[in-house]
Each structure stands twice: as C-alpha cells, then as structure tokens.
Length: 221
Image (cartoon, rainbow, N blue to C red; front, side, top):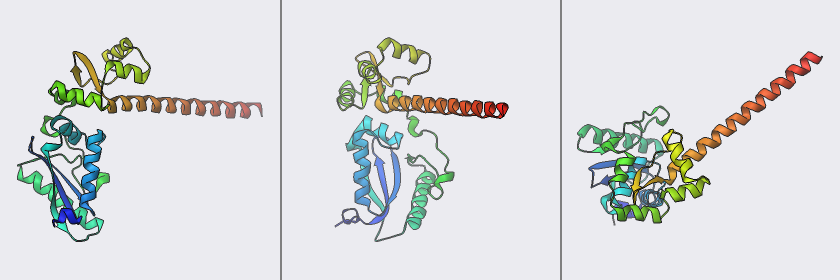
C-alpha cells in the first residue's frame, strides 16, 4: 500500500501535465488534502485562481496528485520547513512553473505575491476554450451569460453594459454564442465590494451624526 493510500503526513505535489506547472503543499493527512483540492476545483471555488483556471480549461485528467515527501508523523513546523524546501527546489530547477500564490511558506504573514505564471489570464484562457467546455461551465453555474447576470443582480442588460463600459463592473471573461459571459465569482466579488462601500458610508454618517450631537450639547452647556 502506498504512502498516499495510508494517508501519511508529508509534502505533496500537484502536477499540471498540460502546462508543465506544479503546486506544492503540505498535509498531516495527504489523502484528505487531495479530496479537498479536487472538491473545491470541481465546485469552481478553489482559493488558488491559477489552479482553478487550469482546471477549468484542461479538466481533471490533466492533473496528477502525488506524495513528494512521505513521512509517518510530523508537527506543522517541520512540515512547513519541508514545504518551503520543495517550493524552492522546484523554482530553482527551472523545469516547472510553480503555481503557489506566495513565495514563503515559512512566514505567510510576510509572503510576497508572485506574478501570474504561465501567462495565465482569465479572459485569454476562457476565450480559448471550446464551445462545449464553455457550455459545461454554464450548465454548472460557474460561468454566466448576460441574462443570468442581469437576473442575479436585478438590473437590465443595458445597465450592465453601461457599467462595464465605465469600468464599474467586471469585464466579461469570454464570449459565449457571441454574448459576453462572466465568472460567478467575479460578480459575487463586485456585489461584496458594493456592500463594503455601503457599510463604510453608513459608518461615516453615524460618526458625523455623533460628532454633531456632541458639539451641539457642548455649545448649549
């Protein structure tokens, strides 16, 4: 039985055969971590956007998940040191593009974001997909045409087009049947940004109101 089947601790590697790229990670239970990665990728909500784009474009058959360093049991600190060594090794050898978002596994708070590897760009990748693959993404609710977006945000299509032209709405990532299409996650992020602005404005008005009341009370006294 392999180390992967026994679920030992260690460092794992996900290899993207179609684009010669890798992702390095650590886990105290490698088998469970594999399920987590592929579950999120299939749902279209993986935290690593480069992995998600590659998965959406090439499908699960292009990915290979394998233990890179298998050990019986290790604490988190030791695993992190090994993970950093594996990331550095793959970056230095120059044979792979490394898709890890941060450079330093040892100090995530001080990590530096890396530039997009492989020339990955949402619009370019999705625009290059076959129509059947795009339809598959639409059917699973991960890619929306303009009708779906209009329904979701309760705005007419002309308003969406106007907002896009003014740079106030996410750019569509591709065309489907000649019409612009968006990733749902981009639309959700736009909605969240509006919510945060509204919360900040309410807080600002509340602060201004409290200041006015305090000043008035002081003056009357």
